[in-house]
Image (cartoon, rainbow, N blue to C red):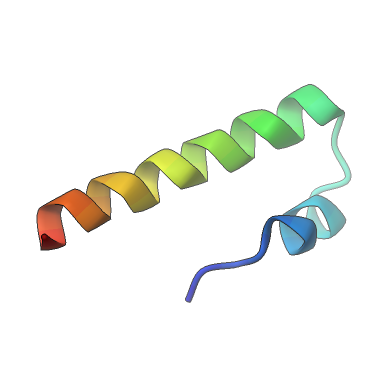
Length: 38
């Protein structure tokens, strides 16, 4: 699990802003999951 950011950018050739938004959304999801599991 856990896709490296570089792979995300290759899969989604979006504008930097969009790609960063997707990355942050994914990052926030992972942080929430980590808090629930802790």
